[in-house]
Length: 343
Image (tube, rainbow, N blue to C red; front, side, top):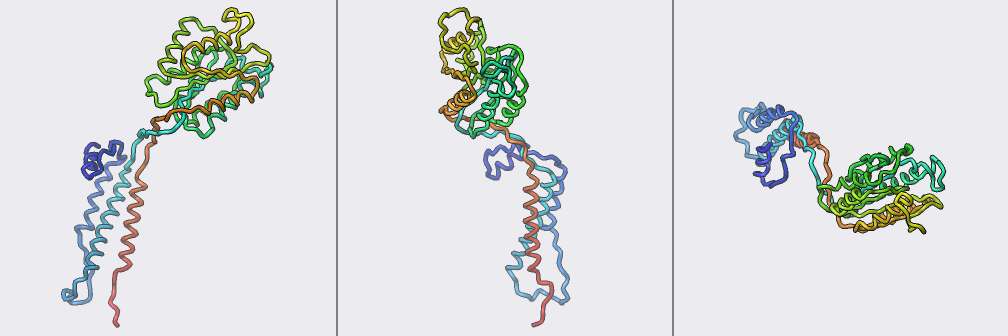
């Protein structure tokens, strides 16, 4: 393939990346030798006249014959190239848009099975409402890079960070089963942040936590999360699904141990990390949707990302060119004079 690349570069194409060009059946390239026949073999029609040497030279006929032979040679060559199965291999295409690199972190603990009043309601549970709002958010015509992490006792990568929104939508639809286990917030956030590791900062990095509860974080875990947020230059948005008349994120009258008011202490820790942070308290589905709409209005720097283009078969192009050459042969053939008519 290097020789093929050098050939095209020698033809003046420059560095166009022909290393992605491949052939499925190289043996068919031997048929290219048949393309020389129309140029070398001369077949003459027999006339019932003693001699045609005295006829005047016809430049038009000479050029028509040359074009005829060239079209025949090209038609055979294009058919051989089509049979060989040339293809353009998979490659990366740089896309530029406006948006953010957003990792959605969805709580699937047992408490998410309750509704906003605190009852176990399957059709109006916090998890169902959160999934519905997130599906709407992802489906909007935005150019964000999106990823999804779900967590309860352990975090699970549901969809990696990328431009494939269908993967995120499928993952959200698959998360319709009821939650279980307890709320391991730190592990979910750590897994989401890990997908920024080693990637260039080409857009605003946003972690959106959707959860109805807090968790006690020891000092070691707090330091780890703080360092990860600073290292990845990420901001944090927490949509806190608050049960009506339940404890919120505001400071309690009697501040006690972290276990007594886990949501407040987690909110206080997030605010002390030194990264952009905002919390939304949502007591109903409308408030959840309003919070996501507010996040959707973020102004971000241009996003540059690599999109993998699938392998493309080029045989149809060569067959189309062969068809055009054949149509040209038929057109020239229709102009051939087969018999002189007496005046």
